[in-house]
Image (cartoon, rainbow, N blue to C red):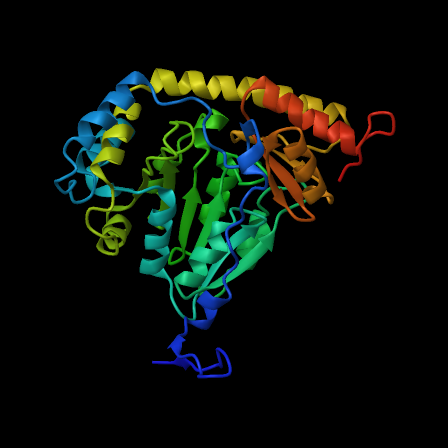
Length: 370
C-alpha cells in the first residue's frame, strides 16, 4: 500500500491513502453554471415532460415493496425489451442507466495496456470511464461537419485497441452517421475489437433502420440505450444494452447483482408500454429543435443538424454565452473554447437563448461562425 506522507502542518505529517495516478488525474464531469437562479434548465438533456400517471403509479406501487431486493438483473424489463426487439432475453442486459452498463463493458473487455478509441469532442464521461477501467483513451477529432470521422477512428485502431465507442447521435454536437456508414465501419473493424454503439438519443432521430439487426452479422457489436432521455426517466436511472449472447454474458458476469432498483424497473416497464406518449414527446422536441436551430442559423451561427434533444452552438466564446444565457434565466452547458449545448425545451427557453445570442452578437453586425 502506498501512503501519502506529505506534511499537513508544523506538528505532524499527514498519512492518508493515495489513489491510483490515473484516478487522481481524472477530469471532473462538468456542471452547468447558475442552476440555482434560472427559470429554465437546458443544460442536462433531460425531458421537460413529467412521467405519465401510469408511470407515477408504477413508481408508487414499487416503492411500497422496497424492503425487498429487486430481481437479479431486471428480469421483467429485460423480457419486455427482448420481446419488442425480437431477440432472446439472454442478449439483453438492463442496468441503472446506460453509463454503468458502459462501465461494466469497459471493465470486462479493457484494462492496463489496452486502448479505447472514441471521437472527441463526444460524451465527456468516456475518458473518465476509460481511465477508471485502467485503459488509455485515444481521442479522434470530429470531422469538419462535427461528425464522427470513422475513417480516422479506424486508422487509430492498433494491436492495443480493445473497444471503439461510437456515440450516435453524438453528444454534444448532435450529429449523426447514417446506417450505411455504420455498416461500412463495422465491416472494417477487426472482429476482436468490440464496437460500442451508444444510442442514448436514438429516438429523436426517427431512424428507419435498427442497429440491433446488425448483431446478426457483427458479433463484436454492443448497442447501448437509455430510458433517461426520450422516455423521460433521468431521475430513475434505467438503461439497457443488446449484444451477442457471448458478449452479453461476459458483461453480465461483470455486473453487480441487483443493479437495477425495483422502482426504476417499474418506471421503465410502464414507460416501455406507452410508446405513443414517448412518440408525442419526441415530436414536440423535434418541432422546438427546428425552431431553435432556425433562429440560431438566421443569426449567422453554423449550427449542425441535431439528432438529439439538444442543439450545439459552435462558439469560441462559449463561457461568455453560458453566462449571458444565465442572465436570461436559462442554464446551458458550455465547453470552453468549443461551443454550447442547449437542451430543447419550451419556447420561452429557446427565446431566452436567442436573446443571449443577440446580446453577444447583435444582429446588426451579424453573428460570427464561431
